[in-house]
Image (cartoon, rainbow, N blue to C red; front, side):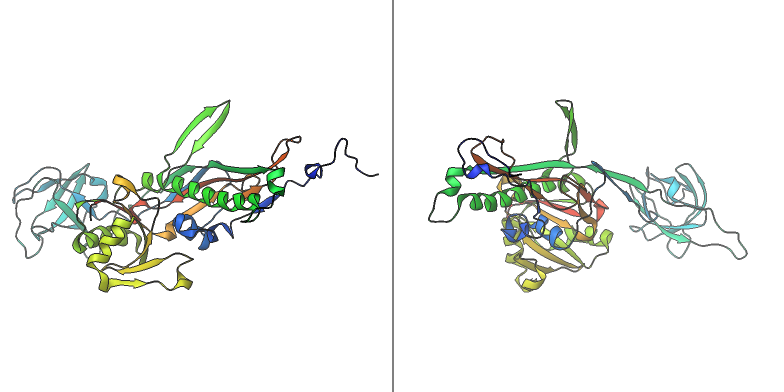
Length: 384
């Protein structure tokens, strides 16, 4: 039997299927420099479906090897109070970098180490409060039994998924009208895809995790890069020098162990680097740049791929650069339905049944997995 349509037949009378269109493979081609983090994560296949609105991952570190002295001591002191006594074991050899002295741990009681001072050629000397103390490792006697076990405990990290929606549409009359620059609905679709990716980018950078109940339903926001980076924050407070840049790079490269990190920077920071390091700057070949204009800065600790970020502008963010280990950053779109485990979907024909228009939208529900925040860094306060 044929399907009948009552009333005047128009262009909106023919029902179309509600389509789910995956735009993960094409969204980064539209204007990649507007959202370099999204572009790189998408191009590098750094996307892993989430199975729950709360995203979880486990992190661990190697045994800590640097502690701080808690209170000044004399050269004759045989007890050292440290911040973290649980990091030490009997027969560990400690080292004070400032004085060059080595000492041997003979007992541990809470945060107090019983020690033999000047265990080696360097004489004992007074130590100051908050003196860094290195644990060089154990030295055990012949025929000794195995020493006490010590391990670090894994830590669970979490983030939340956030729903980001970008609707667009035109009236059916507008869609049917000939325009010099092409169909207006298609234009709105392309423009809205860029706007949707920019919104994702801004949340991935500046989002702060929160949870509220609105109309009896949860509303979640995700933690972005800025909220995750807590340890390696370097405030220049003036004109950036090459020495300062190298000092900023060293901790992130040390913790990440990667030979290459991504630097997402404001125009001011990139210009400052170019001013003092032209001989250390290289253009990244297009096939390696994922559609972005990237430069390679060769630091003493590893290479930085520099990407200009259009969202880093103004008095505050215009002075910033993020240094990211991309092997430890993963997009986590919610699997099934919402975004089908992809970066985003386009849902078509969401207008009311009797509305003389067409309305589509891009929709994403995703989170950010940001592993080992010490492997990343934030540079601020660059004035030139």
